[in-house]
Image 1 (cartoon, one colour):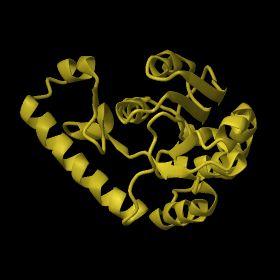
Image 2 (image 1 turned 180 degrees about the horizontal axis):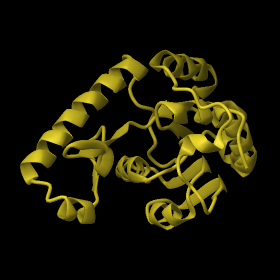
Image 3 (image 1 turned 90 degrees about the vertical axis):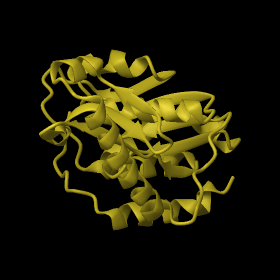
Image 4 (image 1 turned 180 degrees about the vertical axis):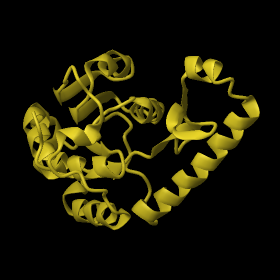
Length: 219
């Protein structure tokens, strides 16, 4: 299975989530996109459900000398997820972890101001929250996002993604109440490999999509 682009993936994912429509009409569903690409997919889901759309902000914690290798992740509210095996194998010091968490939280504050402006995060307490990304690779940012939303009082957490490797799903399922993934290929090397078009999403596009969603999200 391949997706034309993130819009196509979002529309297909929305079809798989149609059973949430009655709950969404009652104002009990919030859709959260993981920036940047996940917001494009989440927009299509939120539009189909006529549910509020927001960003859930988290960032991976990079390994010393290899920032692309995730040793954990942090959410904007300070919620942490760490990989103890990676930290032990790489002999990551507490001082490094403290500085990396501080640095990434600064970036998350910048993104919050950029994406939301003066708007506060959409309340999730007592609601079903659909957490959407354009694909799940390591699951680090997804897992910490779920923990953060649980801490904020979400009643039910549903993970939704077009594609993910099958071995990641059990790890994500420990944090979620349900997981909806359209394609779980046995051979998985990168999320972008399952899209015909997988261009980088600019910040401006994320802001525009969130602003467009405000009209139907006032519930």
